[in-house]
Length: 343
Image 1 (cartoon, one colour):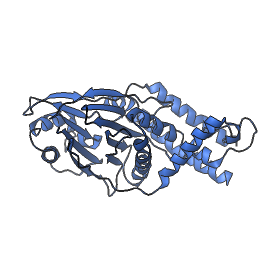
Image 2 (image 1 turned 90 degrees about the vertical axis):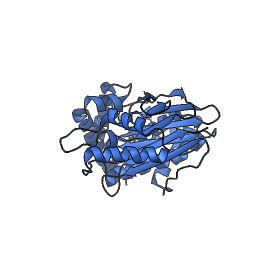
Image 3 (image 1 turned 120 degrees about the horizontal axis):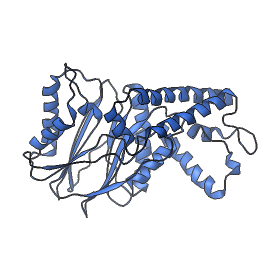
Image 4 (image 1 turned 120 degrees about the vertical axis):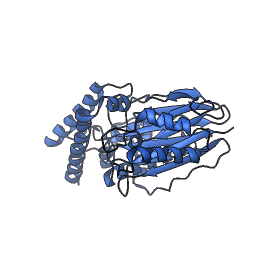
């Protein structure tokens, strides 16, 4: 049993190292800036060092050996955090309670998921569109209320696409559906997800995540942007006159750097404001000559359609994307969400 577990961990570490090192080698400067947020490339290298250390310990048959009693640590604990080197028996009561809660949360990763639903609320008019590059994809969005009643808005994108990305995104969805209803802070949720997945043997990739909490009573919006493409906030009357604000990353993508780097920001919105969430499959969609749709075209399209309903704005941006690419088959998943503040 222990040998099988170590082999699974070794395979996962190899996949994770390939994904993170590949990102470090090939990511464009703009992708690095977005997906790292305020974190540094040194933190990515620190994460690779942790992976290399664990792989070396596996080669020496030392991975998962308790530093106190020199016995094998609990298998569930090692699967959740492959850096674990102390048995549960040697934790304090408070540490044991906290860890048992995280172990229980980690189990939700394997559970069945309910389909996404767009909430019907008088405070927000929401429309959404999502299209995978293959039959299934790695994009995800959801609308989950926080514990204080704030409306949760989530969008995420696993590196890559297809079956592997979809399986990883199922893990993210399960965790968010568990954590958001018992939390009041987007940053708290993002940090918890990072802690649960950064050394998890079953999570071999990284994911960008934007998570926001909208308070209809105050029109306040708190958000944590873990390396995700910056959402666009339009304020004003539309017709090209709306002011634009990009909600830039407050931390690095989940699973990309060692340590906890997520942060939180807050903005004040007004009735009529429009928040546009999307994945990079939209802005990086290419036409035949290699030119990308880009942020500027997205902002211009949003301003042109800002006077319509949320559904019409989604349809307008989609049509401009199709006109630009001439309906070329896209290499990445595309997700677009429009949220209009209505009261």
